[in-house]
Length: 357
Image 1 (cartoon, rainbow, N blue to C red):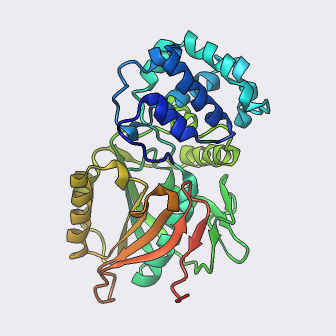
Image 2 (tube, rainbow, N blue to C red):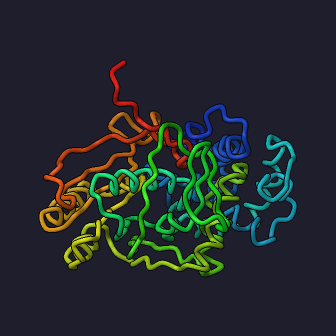
């Protein structure tokens, strides 16, 4: 997760701030890209017109993803040795001269790549969703779940019940699943049996995981030296190919209003799930999502599971929370319960200890 940047900084300043002192490939490349931008090199030409882009656009990550797509489509074989997820083990500090040549040869394509906002559909976050589902099912007494996810990207986390989770003293999910998430949760977990009776998501720019372009897009935004994330994504894409899900092209608030207006059986628990979406939504959209959930809670069994950054910011990790409203015969349970702290990519999910001290 990129840090917050002062809106008065230049693109070069933002690149250096993001890179900090990191010794990985992207740290070296962002510092070199900053120098090249200031020197009027190919990075300056690629980023022309984006100089005043909001800091949250993270232009540097869009550019690096565009470069990665060139590598992934076999058009820059000289760079493969710098990409660990492709088997490369060369010194990342030596990558810039070759990278600069590739950038100079693909200025137009990389300029167009800046239009594509980062999307990774982190399947590691499904561990947080699973913990939230366990808690919602336990509190409600309902084991049939309708799962709704605004900001779902390609919808991979909607397949949480198709993944295998293995911890020291518990496991969940089909043993034959291509994706196995080991030791993702720290703490005393109380697994609950449930069945996802319906699942659906929405996104302003949904990714079609069944298409080569969609799969390429997701891979390109996963940092190439984080090999475990690439392995998880590849396995999740195999699951998605066998069990496709629907992700509507729509804004979160209006979409939730429509979905939550549909009647469901009394024995179905509706779970609205979101992960690292709130920071990208305008304040009005955040309010509309909240209002839709609260209104629906008056007429159905519903829980809201969220993995979002607290007010302190991303540097402290995300909070996994559950809001329980009307749940079966249980009296109305308003208020938010903190379940865990979660890493940016879902690992680890460290369960909250409510005991004092």
